[in-house]
Image (cartoon, rainbow, N blue to C red; front, side, top):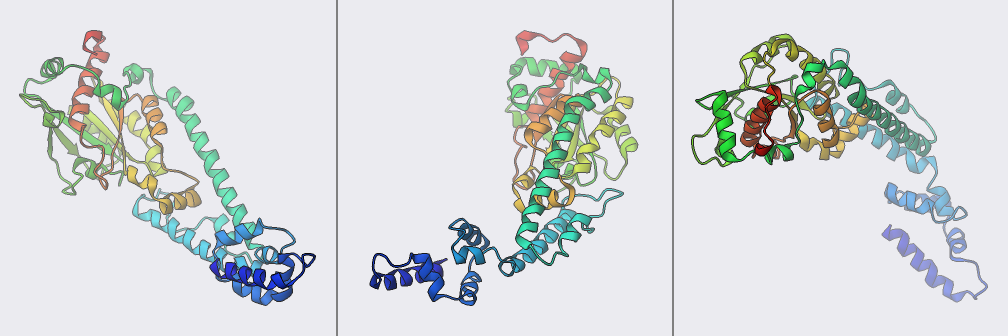
Length: 369
């Protein structure tokens, strides 16, 4: 763009010798520079500069040439290669579904790679198509959360009152909280079953520092001054829905994890809830845990997700709506990569247990809330 400005300055100074009735500057530009020279100039510009030039004037030759296929061809195929790479990058963060291979390029995209003309037009249409399909699919999923999921979940699941993580942390004074926990277990030892699909982020949720083992998380994180309660995190990896949910019958609390990036992870949550309902007696409170939330800010990952699956990372708002629809006691978000969402886990676990117990037996005391 600096080169173009220099040329404009040269032409402007040379035009000072002309009378006031002489041709306008863009006419001088066309007079002194042939199309081949202009194309060389354009080869140094970015696609943003092309777009800016097109808005200058329809009669300006430089603007006209900026729309030519020869200017857009290289950029078009460069973008196609970048899009391919971003789609293949998903294999690092999502597990392929049984009927879906992350190495396979969608048919509509393969057709775009065969284009031989009108590159600017086809690139614009491609992006419009992707955005339109993604928006439509996300709206359909949001509608399913608000309507279909509520109808599919049996009525007894909805006995659980939902609290946002902020609301939950505002509940209960310390003494009331500890007394309530002691009525559940005098030793203040509670088992937390962590379940979810493959690569949902369960192991990193249990140990965000990468040790990937069973460990103990105490209410010292809740700043309790005496007789700390202990929450033992249990992960049984590598099993399908039925086998994994079977181990939850002896748990005090269940954390159902999902990868915000993975469409299949999100849609499998209903199956997890359905299987859990058959085995938990009395009903065990469930916390819905969104994992890998740092990936929402990765533009390359999000673009590849839209291109390949017409999907976007689940937002905080939709995650909370999903937790409400599935009958969970609360919803939390975590990122092991950024070490976010772990500082208040002990407090959330303790208060989720107590709040759910009051709701289930129907003896909730508003003075404690």
